[in-house]
Length: 247
Ligand code: PGA
Image 1 (cartoon, rainbow, N blue to C red):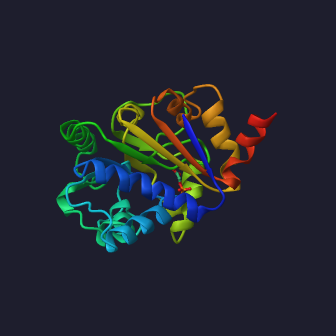
Image 2 (cartoon, rainbow, N blue to C red):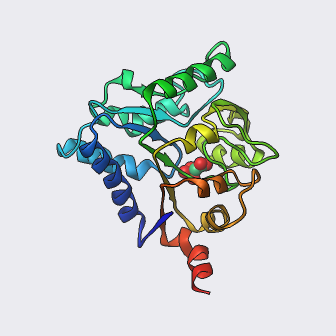
């Protein structure tokens, strides 16, 4: 594992964006795994700025998002498709047909999961998978519990996740109860995983995920198995890991 700690979020966003930019320069047709949520917004801003300055192109890249809510109407501002358009896709030069997000309105969700998994297989391995970390240790919507799934599947959102995401909705009841998410196996197949974690409220969980036992109760702990895991933390998220390392 390669651990990088940044003095502030701006530096972290730039560094994470730079990792993606360098990959695209070396491999213009790279396959990228992308995440939503609060964590990547600044990274996407930095990528959009780099495209505007002509420093990088996504014209030949392919992207796969980790997850999508089930049942939100198409175009709903909290769908992850909307989020991706708003924060990244409309600002970069990627052709829409090269961007993939599960369809949370598919008539048969199981078939949609299979379709997504097949698309992933057809694209070859994800070169770089960008991940955030949930307060409960989830990755995508792979929630803590007795079992984890390897492949893309329909997940029931953990109450803590619905509570955390309620800040984006008018009322907590509006937060969907299910989502389609890549499984841990689909995620771990990526050549490189870039885990980005920010904020004091994640210091405990990132410490547990990266130094604790591998357990389904903390899905992110399985990332310890990955041979090319790059972790980027801001100072606040790193406090517990640094304390543990120094004493
Ligand atoms: P956040 O979510 O980036 O909004 O904190 C991360 C996650 O829940 O995976």
